[in-house]
Length: 428
Ligand SMILES: Cc1cc2nc3c(=O)[nH]c(=O)nc-3n(C[C@H](O)[C@H](O)[C@H](O)COP(=O)(O)OP(=O)(O)OC[C@H]3O[C@@H](n4cnc5c(N)ncnc54)[C@H](O)[C@@H]3O)c2cc1C
Image 1 (cartoon, rainbow, N blue to C red):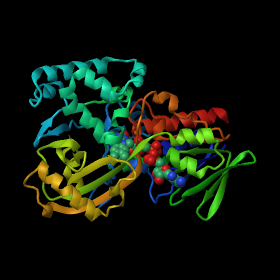
Image 2: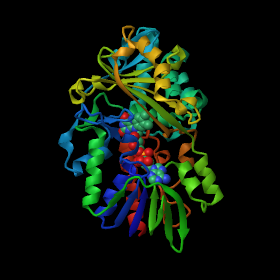
Image 3: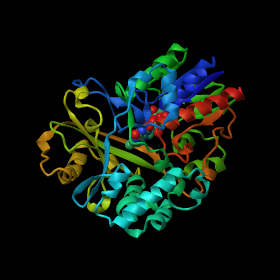
Image 4: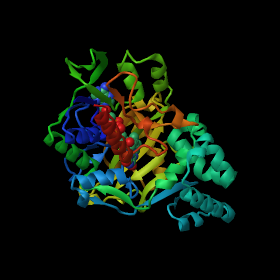
């Protein structure tokens, strides 16, 4: 088969890797000048390793991606430090990533801490998540741990991921999946996630696949048993096409989609992401990798990730690398801010984290945004997920909104890429 793939993110690259191995002819069209999508890195001339545009790590339970890395012969390049994950509460930072640390979280009465511990244990032992998608995470967790612990711990987490508008709509199966898969050790790749992306591109090319960067697919049209792709300055024909772009982008580019199907794509809610990355001359926090920052405390971002408290600064010429990130509706004004405006908005938050912080600690900064970054799984989401095979023969959809109940991630992009390649291979 002659297969076209829209997008050189991890889903598209994995599908291409499997399809070229099966002997199919594959061309990937990637709009951006680089491969890797949300997991791609960028470089600073001083650094040894590129850094992800959006903070990334793996859990030890991420079997699909670790299995693929093994197949690529690169397992020796993965390593699993045990960094500290914490929460910010009323001016203090509390490590919060082990049962003992939950017990030591003194802002909550002991009875609440014990309740949180028991509920977490129950959720980690639970296997059948299906009934949980019929109740919201907000309602379930409030009932399970009580109003006080919910307000301090889990409500801020839900708001930070899904915003004030959506947090009450997210189903409990998603929340269960987050707790179930989490591991204290977090995995990384020598050379960053971009190292894995480069390896995949290299392997796809070695197997005869074509990866065309800077090639935006503007339109998708079924014609005479084939799919025609309209590209900037040209077109291409394929027997089969896999679209790994967002559901909305697929709808907009495919006028022939039946209205019911197009509406089902539009009904899939999602959040965008905004991050500011700072290369600092000094360490910002005392060894914390990830700090959840509750919006209710007036902090202008939801998460502070000090990457170099996880991966040694020696790979970044001694820079201390900090992400300030947030998930926001794609219409939020921050998406049209300049980097300087965002820096000015976020700087007071850094002082709250470390009162000694001064703007002259910042050696360099970068800003990245992405309108489709986090799907919002609402009640009974399993019924809303569009199948891989679209109503147009030969056109397949494989995007983050089809990952469920697991939180989207590169592990599930690998799983999805493999699933669509297998289905397409079988259909041919
Ligand atoms: C803030 C943030 C933090 C994250 N943290 C983690 C983490 O810690 N661990 C983890 O494993 N995962 C994490 N993820 C998720 C992970 O990055 C994604 O799940 C995964 O990369 C999705 O891969 P994908 O190929 O499905 O989509 P994408 O990476 O979005 O790839 C789609 C590609 O399609 C291209 N494209 C779109 N439209 C067109 C078009 N019309 N023509 C041509 N090309 C097009 C895009 O440019 C893009 O390259 C995070 C994501 C974000 C946003």
